[in-house]
Amino acid sequence: MTMPRTVLRNVARVIDTHLGLDYAPARERDLELRLERVANDMHLASAAAAAEAILTSHDCSELITTLARHLTVGETYFFRDQACFDRLGSEILPALIRTRRNRTRTIRIWSAGCCTGEEAYSVAILLDRLLPDKTNWEIAILATDVNPTFIDKASTGRYTDWSFRSPPPWLRDRYFNKEDDHTYQIRDSIKNMVHFDTLNLVSDSYPSTLNGTQSMDIILCRNVLMYFSLEKVRQIVTRFHLALSNNGIFVASPTESSMPVFGDFLISTRQQTTFFTREPCSPVEDEAVARSPCVSVGDNSRISNPTVPLPRASVNATTASDWSAREPDAPHDARAPIPSEAIDRATRDCDCGRYAEALQTIFTHKLHETGCKSTIRLLVRIYTNQGNLDDAAVWTQRAVEQHKLDPVVHYLQAVVMIESGDCVGAETALKRALFLDAEFIAAHVAMGRVALARNMRTEARRHYRNAVSILEKLPDDDIVPETDDLTAAGLAQTLRWSTSNREKSTVCER
Ligand SMILES: C[S@@+](CC[C@H](N)C(=O)[O-])C[C@H]1O[C@@H](n2cnc3c(N)ncnc32)[C@H](O)[C@@H]1O
Image 1 (cartoon, rainbow, N blue to C red):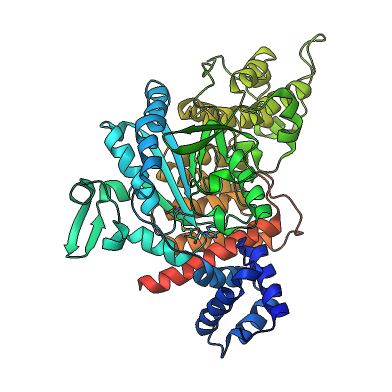
Image 2 (image 1 turned 30 degrees about the vertical axis):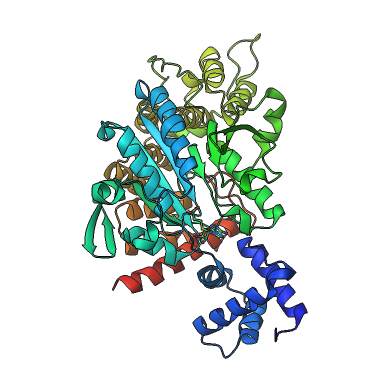
């Protein structure tokens, strides 16, 4: 070892802060070797120069990208850990499909720390085998990683023998086109099921509708947590808990499953695998959950909660100008709690995934008839989180009809359309929102999401840049409207980071 130990410890601390990766003293030699690679990448003369650049860097997003490219471990293959995929394919997914078949026909899965995509594609293949009527379902498989090089490779879907270390016998013939003796291209029918994006798990950017990390039925984060310090693992697992639907399932690797961080989950060990289920929270937990960041869209009870049919009674017409003037609502009945209390209760129930109760409160107190923005937003959240996009669409349409001049309702309509896969409709709704409020940050970000879904990276970058330039005018701690409590500084950093990664990959594409 040639570098002073104190310098290495300081670099390790910066890495822990930005990426969560744990370079304990025993791994100092490994860290020094990796710093040599960072030095090469940054055109610096030595590992020591790289260390100094890291310790004095002011551009977090650039630093995170560089560190991610050289410090992450890219080890993965199709159907890694057969016991896990056996249980997913024989128990977990069939149960989810059974529950959803006669209801919403939606499934949301997130492969977090997806590396070069083999895990996410393996899940897509499982679903393809379990769902002969796949086209009648809305399947969202999100796959994210902090290393943009991995995400670029995953998006191409081209693999060599190394990714097929213990494949099921049918895998290559059925799901890949052979390009040469050692290269296989995944078929479009599977490729199109997965959406890849960069995301740093050591950030507050999730769960959020802004990047589609909310209301997950299953989160796989396998062979990722083992590289993190225990403190970071705790923070990440807490966020995953919020990102899961009620009864949603978290899957780690067998080694990670014994970490002392899963106290909030129901643990189920079977077929040599341990899965963690998010249970609906109890009333005692209400307050804590209601106060948690980003929780507003992170809870979902698509499996357990009955869907309350949407009452078709018309909402009293209010004009755009009295939309916000009507908040807080006036009491309807002396014996009933004042509607603002009822709205608070319904919001808490929604935060805890008790959608039936939340809807009951709304309709019992006729809150929906007030036409107030917070109620409509709550209804949209409830129905969206239940996967009941039809009713969510009905409510946003009504809101749009009554409050044409309010940018927020157009934005809400776009969110529902994005969830339904209607990019064209979402773009139109977002254009309306931005016409009414050119500084509507969440709408710019959603425009970026829509562009990405259509593979228009340059467009996406432009929208994210617009959002960042508006964010830069706000105080760092300001909460950005419609973003589940994200701060201006936090969102700007995430978008800058995402934009710089996209700039690099666009250059690679050329
Ligand atoms: C060993 S791979 C696991 C791949 C796959 N989940 C599997 O089990 O085969 C670990 C992945 O975690 C990713 N990773 C490490 N730190 C991360 C972070 N802070 N945020 C997101 N991903 C991270 C790495 O880039 C790498 O792709």
